[in-house]
Image 1 (cartoon, rainbow, N blue to C red):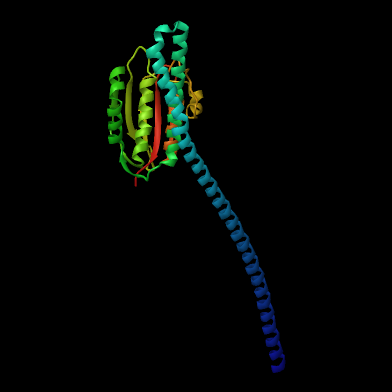
Image 2 (cartoon, rainbow, N blue to C red; image 1 turned 30 degrees about the horizontal axis):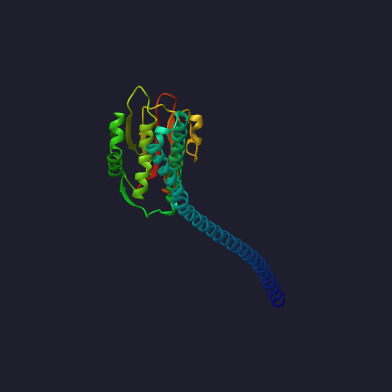
Length: 287
């Protein structure tokens, strides 16, 4: 009896050992599979890191090219334009009496085209400088920024008999100079796209749609636009009006969008023809 009991105990132990060995094998296979998965994941991460490094290098090259373009635009392109404008003024002042009506008209057209090209180059420089000459973010009072902008635009506001109402505005984390560019462009547009029969009336106010964002609205009573062109107006060189109707290069709102996006926000607008427009800028809440 004892011998049979001992054999049963040995068999039971052998079964337990076999079961443990089987579990160990399963565990080893599982560990191996997990190790292979981890190795593949690490290789994928290495490839992604290399791709990111290549992208960063491409971005650095792109920024360098932008810097080179800015240099060319500010020197090599503007100098001939200055000469064209300068010699054009000399012709107008010294030779206007010997030119017939057609000649004077041609001279005016030349001067106008050169001036538009100069403004276009200046706007392209501003567009490229949004990232090239960017400054670190710091707390910026939008109220103080807009008061500075209104002081700069005082002559235009008086000339147009415009009225600007400014509500309570927040402080945001921003590049102060770029905030000045942003609101100068938006307020200038509100003054420029006014109705002939009514002076411009602009209301600037803010609200907080949620805990993450602050919304700034710039509402005017101008000529407005059809919202089917909403995406188009924020693209470089896009204009809804001819130079004869309203001056401009079509770069102002593109610059605004680039500035807002650099600050982690977004810009849009609501409008309809003849009923004014409201440009809406959303910024992250300062924390």
